[in-house]
Length: 444
Ligand code: ASP
Image 1 (tube, rainbow, N blue to C red):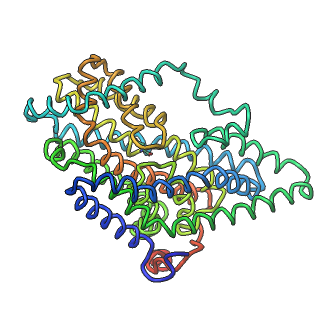
Image 2 (image 1 turned 120 degrees about the vertical axis):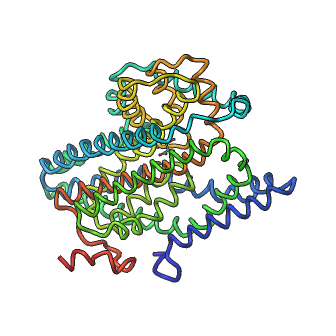
């Protein structure tokens, strides 16, 4: 593993990120700089993201089938399923409540000079309109369509797109349960096959991670070269409210880890930090998924059957960071356009942001599309809505990076909590990463 030799992996990634930002900012000053990064540096990042996405479907298949087969008993699986959904919903509602509290106390929408707002909204009018159009397409689907969509009609078709993760999971659960139902001797070769496949795929994650410091360098250099820092001062309060809310949410996770698992929350964060840094660099919980699964299984010590169900489902439906951001952004836009929000409206935000975050795809910028649906549910008129989306568009990417970190942290936390609650939280397989991790357990 990369972190065994020399500098720990999370430091390598962090250094890569910082170097990338500095490199991007320097090259931005040259007329050829941004193009050079885009043509010659950025491809390293693109290849890295592709590699991670490449192994997501086989990883879920191998580890979930292996996990269910290891359970020996189907009733245990339903316990894991019910707890996962319950805790996911709970964390999402907590996240939205934190978002609403911060934005209502902070009031970031007050006092922005109208000329600054208009200029920002004008600059991003076309990009904002695209998000609104994408949201309209989404809201036209019938209410139960998402359940129908969870059932694949062709497994090869389902497995051919990372956007169909839930379909793959449905097939794999069905397959795994039937594997438990057939004669043990007949099932064994299949189990051995998936066991071995799982090992190989986990090794692939390790190998891909070797280039992660270079990949994040490339991704962040590209981003820094294309970002206008002046925007941050105009939308600073809004961005600040989102970031403070997200930090508070991370505090909630750490508290839950400390109280429920009795382990060191800092040790937990350190264990999953490479996944968090990748989430930040890629803005995609789907691309980060293989690393999240590997960290939670090997470095936190949650058993495969829990990780392989909870993490992929979480990457698809549990987005605490996104829901928190949607709550803050919705209220911010309403403050800016002078749209009053009573208690009922705030409750509508809790409900719609929960659904909107479930419906958001785990890819960059998806949360903003679903924000449109939250604003529509509040009754914001369409011209004002388009103005609001265009207004916040300029800072969306950096906030997307931050909320994706929280999305991934939430999935890892819930996997650990569910693991603890069903007796499937053991020792990490990789123990050398933090000697303090067991401190509290040993003391107990
Ligand atoms: N980028 C986020 C994710 O992949 C989704 C979003 O909020 O846009 O988790």
